Image 1: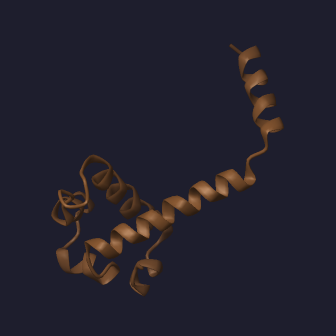
Image 2 (image 1 turned 60 degrees about the vertical axis):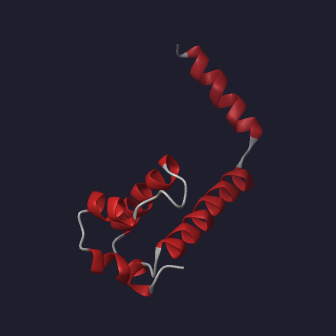
Length: 94
């Protein structure tokens, strides 16, 4: 899990770190994913990254939990009737 320093960052910066990291792991398997690419894209010093996460595995596990929680929240709050109505409303506006 992330170190406390990560959670002290502004939400926008946390989101940026998450998005850039997910992109890296989406484009490469775990072994080929590069912390150096993530750090370069974030435009931070390597030492700063290690204040947020202990290592690549720590970051990866955090991202798995983060994405699973997002999916669970979506499924839990999904209301088919509202989705259906939105689709009908959208199609009438086309």
